[in-house]
Image 1 (spheres, rainbow, N blue to C red):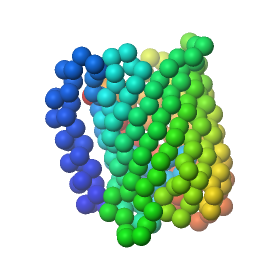
Image 2: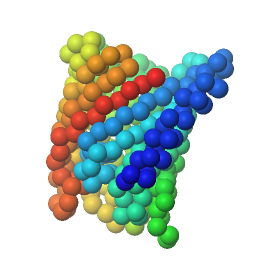
Image 3: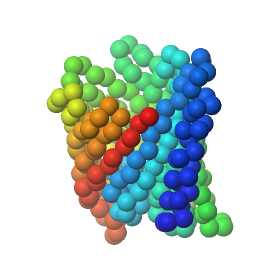
Image 4: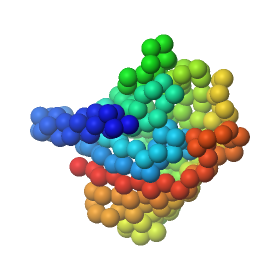
Length: 231
């Protein structure tokens, strides 16, 4: 974990130098985020076996906000022996009939996985969302034709609702269903609040759980705290 965490920190710290070289371009701009949490949760399941994690991402967005792309890293705990996942993704954000749409393609791989392990995969995501005053709603559909490891294709469908209580405090709750070939099918849910400590610093406290009947911390319930800094 220490070695992968060091790699992640070095990568994250190198991102601002890339930004300095690129942010002056008239075609678009770079933004960055770094953070850490008590558990790395994705689709309501843990990717770090319940251990703390760190993450960082860089994102270039064109001038009108329609297209974006960039790399990201996050620490994990995988049966492949990898403790770091890297990814590159790109997407578009059209507005259709008053709804915000986000269509994304991501390629990710596990760094330093053992020989013979299927350590990379593609992930495709479609999100549609709408805000009316303080109320928010979002539907997410994700698909991968071949997951990492022994599991194959999977789909994830999630509905989420939210409410802005104040300018700084918001809450969300979500329920999702994951169907996986050669792996566990489950329903997951989470609910929590996000507080904007400053314009760039957020803290999120969230409860996660699933109905998966599997041992270990991957699908177990957990209260997760995450802090993120954007610049």
